[in-house]
Amino acid sequence: MRVAREPVAGLLVGILAVIAVQVALQPWTLDDAYISFRYAENLARGEGLVYNPGEWVEGYTTFLWVLLLGVGNALGADTRTLAKVLGVGFALATLGLVAFAGRLVRAVDAREGAVAAGLLGTCGAFAAWVMPGMEVPLVALLLTGTALACVRALEGGPVVPVGLLGAAALLARPDSVVVVAVCMGAVTLVRLALWGLLAAVGIDGS
Image (tube, rainbow, N blue to C red; front, side, top):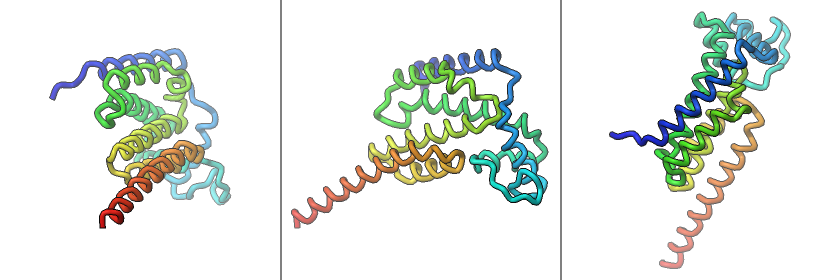
């Protein structure tokens, strides 16, 4: 199957832009990231989700991120390195989703996806947060997936992915609720309206 050139070009522009930002910023690990690191490492050691062993205080808001780091640490990975590697992976996956959005939804064509990926890669609010050790790339990926799943559902596709991705986004960061609520609300309203119309037609036709 032939791959359209536009998404690939947009993806490459986005990746190169992100690389340029990392070269300018690294080495850099945000101090707040060490909060998640500490919880993850204690979880991996069997102490539970605690900052200090024996003190059951919830000082994190990124459950899914802490869980991923905890599992990785338990498997022998260095937490700081793992966070940066995951950040790069999630950022690249997000760029890929945006670049090839035209393959997933009818509302976006190949050229629009390519332009969006290029712009995303050059956006400082996205690129600067790829490797400081925070959960931002994970949240970006999940919210992008939620939004695309929402559009696909509005186009007649499955609804379940919207809920699953939205739930994961909320576990990764609570303030994802803004985007998730809009997506779930839109899908619910459209699907309910559609079922209502079908029911009305069925009743009138009987």
